[in-house]
Every structure is written in structure tokens, then in C-alpha cells.
Picture (cartoon, protein in one colour):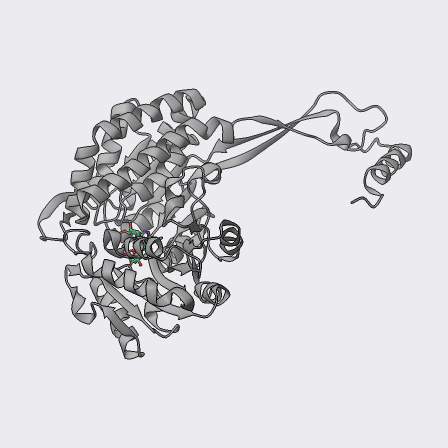
Length: 495
Ligand code: NDP
């Protein structure tokens, strides 16, 4: 672990009780520098292990995480306040991703021959994806294992070392992930954690030894991180949350859609980047949907079905969005302003909220949902696509073909059909957004390539007689042969 060069510390607190869960050093830029330098050295060793060596160790890490499930989930519960069952679900998903990344890294990134084409007939062309060195991961608090592991597992499998700065709200979970990694890889500090507040993350983003930053958090902070990265032209992947919509078509299973909407909006207290924040329902099934939705939402209990709001300042954001919705003519059909009683927020269902209200346009990150009646599914999609975010979304429809067509028109990185957030549990599917939701991808083959650089190698196997084109010694006859060849290959109109 990096050592703090000064004695500053900070506490992580349990959001339900305010009790101190742990005290951790505030690592400054010098401590971050030291961590990145030692990670760079460890990363060279890690890269040198090759795919098989890394696969074996990462699968062992996966087993260590699985055996320590209770320890991990207890700490997640303490630091975030979420129920242990939800902590278990996110850790199991993270383990699944780690397994996939370890098993698929060689297939996705390893050397492969690619066709050269006729003009390069004398060449052998090889493509492979090499590690970037040290990947800096800046993680959030809402899923302190699942979300950063979407970068950490894929970066490690691609042969990089990782320096992870967990959120100041969940430093203990970050440290535990690295401690357990060291059980599987005791030789070198390949995966390190630096703790601290925003400025520790800023130092990581600005460190010249970083090959790429993987950031998850707010759009505003992503812009600051990107500005810090600009100094060294450090590339970045940014996962910045969303304002995901759920669309209910006229032929949908209304009860299933309502069930998914409530869970998608309220689970984890709504603190989910791909949580459902808006619902658009075709008018034919609106009344039936609302009956199912309100009944279910009223039965959900904060403090039992989900925990407190992890970040204390977020309750004010939630209150503002609810107030704004009501002031604009919206109706609270479940809960209301009084539902915001820090550190808990009870379920809130709002209807008829103006589409320009903050409750519809900004990320609320609370157990609230807006529902709007629309004439057609096309109108639903138009409204769903009318925000600056574009992370995930959901479509409930009785027609699989139609649902697929609709999914393609949704301006997001991911869409779930007839289930909610299901894409996050499929390791082969890339995860990431468009617009204010960020750019780049974690998970899947794209997630592995995100943490690697393509390396192209062309090897001349023999000299092409009469076609020595990259030489000052080439002749007009050789150029003429080239023009003849290209005319033959590309000069005809073909379908
Ligand atoms: P931030 O974007 O402020 O923080 C995310 C991460 O970035 C944390 O690890 C944070 O560290 C770190 N950080 C903060 N400032 C800097 C900086 N200048 N340079 C580098 N790293 C920095 O999000 P918040 O936790 O404050 O949450 C605010 C809002 O962001 C939420 O209300 C929600 O809307 C959204 N959000 C979205 C998430 C998602 O899943 N996409 C996850 C979390 C939040 P530290 O915690 O120590 O300040």
C-alpha cells in the first residue's frame, strides 16, 4: 500500500448511524506518485507473466473473493448502509465479471493473423493488444465492488497494474479488494489502493505515470478529471450516470413492467447509475400500470428493502427534484416531500411532471420515479431520448421483434427488454454511455480492449519481384503494374 507522507486521515462513516467504520490516510500527490511508480514496476512483471499466468492468478483471486463473500458484504453494508442481500448481489456480479475477463483476455487481446489483401501478399500481418501500464481507477460509493471491478478486473486481465482510488465514502471496501488480491498475487503490488478525498483522485488523474483513467461518478467531476488528464494526454473512460427511462408498450405484461419499474427505481435507494428514473406508458395500459405500480411502491420499505441515502448531501438533491416536480404541477401518487427524512427517503411516485423539470432531466439518485402517459410508443421514445444523458434503458413489450427495433432507436449504451438492468449481469456485453453519461466501455471484449493498445505488426516474408514500391529505386513500370492491379481490383462497379 502507498504510505501517506503526512498524517492527515479521514473517517468512513456508516450512513444509517453515523458511526465510524474506519479511519484511513489522506494520500497526497507524493504518495500517489510513489504508488504509481511501484505499480509501474509491478505491472511490467505482471505483463511478463503472459495470459496464462495472469489467468491462473485472477481465477485464484476470484476464488478468494468468493470465499470472503461475507466479509466483503458486511463491510459494504457498513460503509454504504445497503442491505447485505444487495451487497451480495453486487459482489456476485463482480465475481462473474472477473471470471469472464480472466478467461477471455487471450482470445480477445492475444496475437492474431489478419488478412493482408493482394497488394500486401508478401506480408504477414499480426494484430495484438498490449497493456497500457498503470490504469488509475476512480470509483464511486453506490456499488463499491461491482462498479470499480468492471474496470479493475478487465484492466488486470489485459496485463495492466491498477491504482484504485475508492470513494471517500467506501475506502474500506476498496482496501479489502486489494488486500484479498495480494493473497492471490503476493509477489508484487500489482493492485494498489490510495485513499483520500477528491484531491487524491485529482492527483491520480494528473499523475504522469498513468496509462489510462477509468472514472465513475458525476458528469461534472468527469469534466474536471478529463481536464487533469489533458495535461499528460492521458486517455480516459468516463461512466457518469444517467436518467434512464422505462417504456411500457400497449401489449406489455403490465404487472411485470410495474414490478421492474419499482425495483429498478427503488432498489439500492435509487442510487444506481442505470436505475429507472422515468417511465413512459402508452395510454391504453396506463391506468392498469399505475394500479400495479402504486400498490407495489407503497409496499416497499426504506430501512428494510433498501438502506439509507449513502451520501448525506444527496437528500437535498432528491428533495429539490420532488419539490420542483410538485411546483411545476406534478402529482405525488406515492409519498411526497415528506418522504425525504434523512438519512432515509421513502418511495416517491410522481406523475404529470413537466418534461423540463429537474426531476425529469437531472440525475436524482434517489428512490423516486416520474411516470407519464403517452399516446404512442414512438412518443415515449422521443421523450426518453430528449435528455442529455444516455446510459441505459428498458422496454416492456409483448412483441420481441418490435422491442428489438425500439431498443435500437434508444439513444443509450444499453437497453434491457422485458427485464431491468439485465445487461449488467452479462459479462460479454459492453457497458457505458453516450452524451452526458460519458464515453468508453467497461465489460466484455470492448472492456478488455479499453485497457489495451492495439499493436500492429507487418512482416515482409519475401520481396515482391517487380513491385518494389517503397524505394527510391522503383521504376515507372512498377508503378504502371500497381495502377493496373488496383484498376483490376477496385476499378469495377460491384454490388
Ligand atoms: P463525484 O463525481 O464527485 O465522485 C466520484 C469519484 O470521483 C469519487 O471517488 C470521488 O472521490 C472522486 N473525485 C471527486 N472529485 C475529484 C476530482 N476533482 N478529481 C478526481 N476524482 C475526484 O460523485 P459524488 O460521489 O459526489 O456523487 C455526486 C453525484 O454523482 C450523485 O448524486 C450521482 O448523481 C452521481 N454519481 C453517479 C455514479 C454512477 O454510478 N455513475 C456514482 C456516484 C455518483 P471522493 O468520494 O473521495 O470525493
